[in-house]
Length: 325
Ligand code: GLU
Picture 1 (tube, helix red, strand yellow):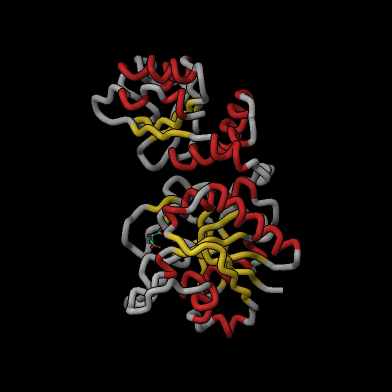
Picture 2: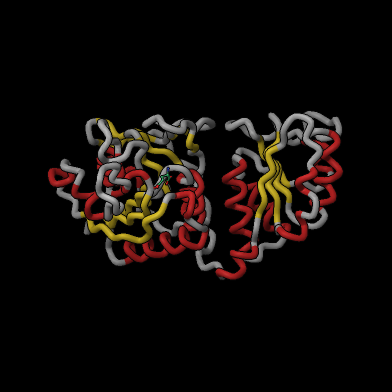
């Protein structure tokens, strides 16, 4: 049946010339001249027309529902076009709940359509190839950018303007699009999908804060957090360390809400039992912090919020981070 393309806005839709309105999914698709040669039918649908920084968890879950229905109704795969700013988070949220083997390929652009060397058309073409590739089936949600295929689980936006902004620092790309052929080199670990049917009120209430520790950080801004939030992700130094002075504040918070420990470095995992000074990973785990493993702070926050919104008990949250972290 071909591919359904869901357009959500972002740079790929910003005309960048005298036209005011954003490009529709059909206009984005029409700009991909090589699509005609591919012989794949692309049905474009406009879902949201916003900068990706304005997308919400609820909207992303709605998009997954639309995409899942399209596959159930016969689409080979689904392409989502959106802004790049939150692509690493939306892709991971979609991946956590994506129930199909059919690929869900997310892409966008770093250059607006009217700019020289606009990358949107090439990214959409590659994403359509991935969405219909037998090799990409079963790999979950994928970010297709600059002819690379990244697992939602690992991908990061690592540059503010480069057309090669997306990378998977801890794992590398899963595959490449070479001469129009999708070459998958690796298969990402897959897990049972979490339920996408999350009550919207519970989702809104499941606020998860993110605190990035910094030199000489006394954590004053965490004061009263247990009154406004249901969970906290700490982006610690290096292998998951915080200033010693912050440790007891985090331990007290961990008595009231799940607190997940991650690294602010951008790649690699936190440790579990190598250092023992106050504020070390061993100390923080002893105080009840949950080890986020290889999950970066933003992805850990996505997983924690989805679990809290689904009413997961603490033991389930610990288990989810142990298996997915
Ligand atoms: N960089 C923005 C994004 O990620 C694009 C802003 C816009 O679409 O207006 O969505």
